[in-house]
Length: 512
Image 1 (spheres, rainbow, N blue to C red):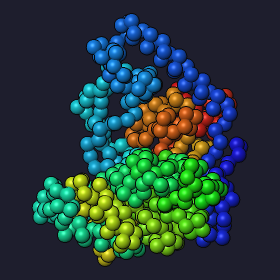
Image 2 (image 1 turned 90 degrees about the vertical axis):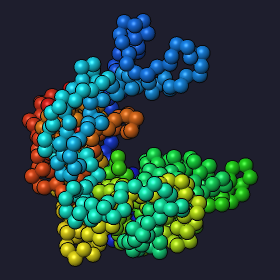
Image 3 (image 1 turned 45 degrees about the vertical axis):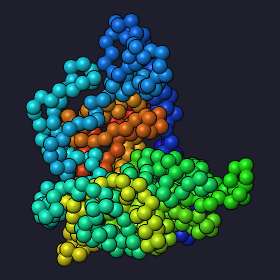
Image 4 (image 1 turned 30 degrees about the vertical axis):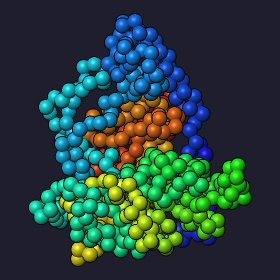
């Protein structure tokens, strides 16, 4: 078997109360070579087809520069256009599939067809019923249109309407917003919190309010685009450390303190470490005990993005801090979203009261963005109270336990079948490696034929030789659904070693 390894595989075990197990298997050399060859062939054919399009032998449907603007600086980037025309368009049917039902354990898909090789799509008027949903971030199954949360949201809609039509600092601050923020602070175990209407903007608009010129941001190389954008907008100096690698982070911290700012060598005004709880494309969990230990040792600040981990990790569903049994006060800025485990929309930041009071006056997403919709706020309040057990039932505990059991079971089944799986054993995000470009489209289509909806991801969202399918496990999934997903590909592998399921990442019948 190929060697299984993990970045920084020997953590400081004294900081952990339980085993920390996650693996990232090296791409087999043969697979890497064949993958590069596949992209090379696609590129060659792409240039040939562009030649045909240039002479109007083949029609090109994508946006291009107008003839009267031929002397202008190009509005579109050439490589992005090339990639979209010749590679992405071949497998475009795997994305943006419209659904027409609640995104629960099963969804209904609107059937669509293309008559021009994925340039455009037409709806047939038919609906594909009961597709097992392995793509939504509905970790606790709260994305429902019936039940306590939905009923409470409907009542709130009748009382407040669906839109506030103002910002929080003007006339858009409702009592339900105040209730939500107090509940979030209590849930997180921090002094105060603030809610925002959009999860992406929570990062991209609040980081610039916290750091600026003369500050240093140390960012994990796999951080989400919203964190990257927020760091760039802040005007701070950004340095990137290897994913979950504490030696890399500590080296950057030491160098920052020893050398200070470039040219002047003055001390940095602030050093902010930015990490995520669960990394959504890798399925890995941050080594938070070690990050906190380094943060304290070098007197830095810590910004923790718990978009995927809040509600999905920990015995009480309170995220990665709860998962490791740490003190929330050790994290300076606790950020998360309501878009996943709570089945709603928006985001939050929690921390000390002074921090939140400062953000209320300086955050662009607080000053200029419209307030969160009241029924959305009520959905969050209802689902959070269920998780906390304040609804008087054990439904929250049951869902947390079910999610944990489903995650363990699904990961174990895929590994037993010989698939190459990335990430932490406790992560509900399960990346299954595909590697080759042809497999991206083939896997997504073959799964849909078997009434399973899944997300397939390739370059540039992943490294070029690490294309993958990403499953998101939910508490709403039954054992039968997970068995259907895992066993649907259980085929007899070919005797040809090139087609062996273990080596290639997926079984031979899906290799196209």
